[in-house]
Amino acid sequence: MLPIAIGADDAAIELKNIVKAYIQQQGLEVADYSQDANNPLYPDIAFTVASAVKEGKFERGILLCGTGIGMSIVANKVPGIRAAQCHDTYSAERARKSNNAQIMTLGARVIGPELAKSIVAAWLASEFEGGGSTSKVEKIGYYEGLKSA
Image 1: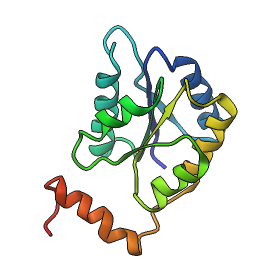
Image 2: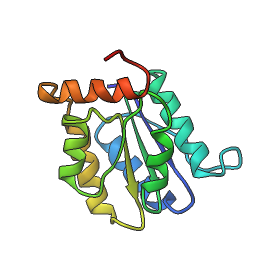
Image 3: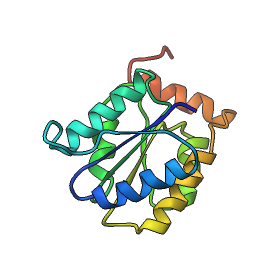
């Protein structure tokens, strides 16, 4: 698997560090795009990570902010990216299996560290199932102007 891109704003740095360490403990490489002097706002972080995933530098990305909502909104502005806010393991699995989401967002003010690790584990273990979901994911691409009807 390609390295995982991760990014967090100031509200989620602590949880990001826990998630990043967990991913590394699973033997996966992590590239960190979190808030710094050059990247101060969550929209910049989310757009940078989503763009890098779209360009194929990373297979998947994880974005964290206070709720996960803002990061998801911004990441979904990048055509071809499907970002899903996940606050439970079932949503994380379905984000991958049914929607082929390349980016997961988490809210540091919504979930705790142990739940975050469980959610990340479920998401990383899940792959797109295709089947009946294929035409639905293709339709998303159509509405983004990336695929023909």
